[in-house]
Image (cartoon, rainbow, N blue to C red; front, side, top):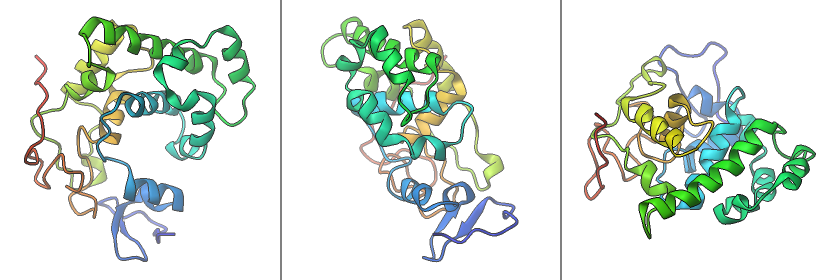
Length: 225
């Protein structure tokens, strides 16, 4: 496990026993460290992957990410691997079953929102044409630059793009998709890079350079009006 100081440093970073610099939140437990090192901020561009993370961010609301991460396999089993078409077919019986499933967060509103979001994702395919998915829509809100926080206090909690994305998703029937939740999603799947400048993960996704400019070959989204 990475070493954590009893008093968090002012910049929000700690150096682990392996010599790598991480934010404090990713240095508390081995599972958080592995998630940070291997997954958080790496690009996820497929519909299933984006739908899973959209659902998990919704379930995380009001809870710690560690709580969600430790139940991730339970969520995957409960929601059919987050296959959009399968989850969209879940009905009242599945809701009651999920409310009895101790391997997930048993919150009726969040469960029902996940089912509704799967149906909205299917409707999105029809509205936007063949080959266009939830992932395509979410990634279209990639900004022209990404933040360059040096300290934890400088990491934003939302952006003009996350506000616009939340508004668009709500218009299309999605729930639990507020601007802060959508910014967290954008961080998790690589649309923005909020790794602190001195973190070993800064600029490693292939989407963004360390200075916050787009990496070569990265497709740009649009700037919200």
